[in-house]
Image 1 (cartoon, rainbow, N blue to C red):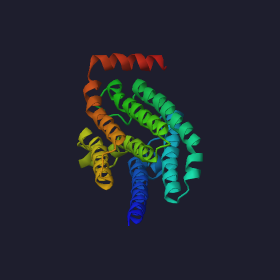
Image 2: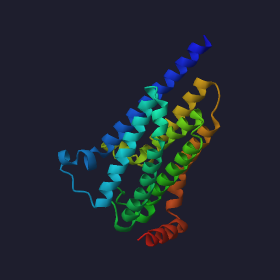
Image 3: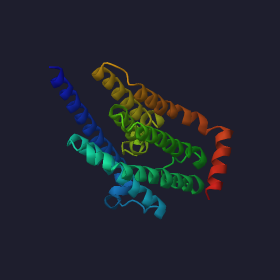
Image 4: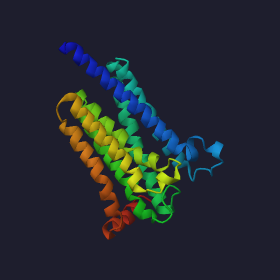
Length: 244
């Protein structure tokens, strides 16, 4: 009986991660359809630079890679999953590096993704923290790669960490009017919901999942608070000048 139960839980895990991978891809597609994936259908203006296009391609590759890795585990091909790990490290590095310079360019020259009433240097705090949190979670996931329970939960958080930019672009005016309450609130609810489900399912709280979720969720109000400080503005000014 215990063996069957264990198998059922593993199957439940694979099903959950499949749902998350599909949901992640769908939210990204919907959020960026008008400005990137289906911009031809909406007659949207062209991308502001080649760098933005490269950033979009790399992020798309990351979403596809995440889905592929989930599919490999679901298909019981863990060795292939592990063999592709180095590709994931290279791709994640490109996500951070190209994402950083794309965010810097937006902070210096302005970006259509930034709300018109928020100064570009103040808004720079959002993508900057996105990259810092993603990098931290990914490095932790790689560090704990020999512990599947921790590794997969931390990788789950990397996907959640990239939800805000896509959620903020979902073309529903009523939801967009909620601002941070919407695009930070949805990932917060998802993270708490998955943490609660995981704890209920396993009968114990995974400490690394908890710490990762707390850091991710806490970063949202911290970003808002920090963005209006003189310290952040000075740091952002220095960083964007240094990265010119």
